[in-house]
Figure 1 (cartoon, rainbow, N blue to C red):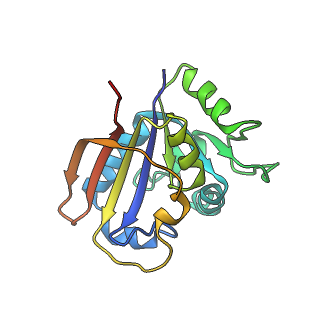
Figure 2: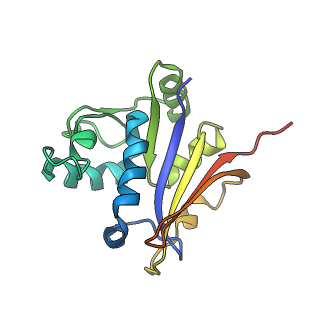
Figure 3: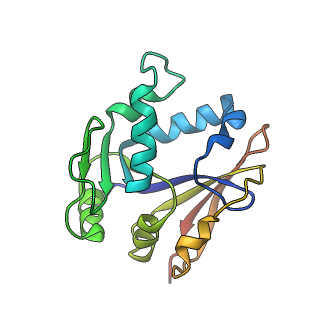
Length: 184
């Protein structure tokens, strides 16, 4: 069974939106880990807000430059959880139809590599509640951004996780990886 890995950039004050603040921290260590994640994933899952943000940026990036990641993002199979997106224009994008939990359960049952998910909002909340998220990786950036915190959208989600890995980058970014606690 495929794993669903959530990878989210976050500030010290819990902001994830418009992560332009990640730029100064995206050094060789970050590029290496990001490359590991994409090499291990042959599909990407996102909600509508992440789709809108990504699809407005990635198609304009230079795919011939391997340091941009554009070749991966523009060509990987993309699944969007949305009830309003009907005709996605970004290459290789499919809108999930019907019940989100059923659709993602079916995706995970398919042959293939991991499914990577960026962002942490209502789609992630539904998938955590359903037990479908196998790992969350928070890329904690040493900045305070101000603005809405990630927890605002997740007020009704309760889950416990075990720490499975921590990577501390020279830039000050800490990548903390967690898996849902298993109940014995």
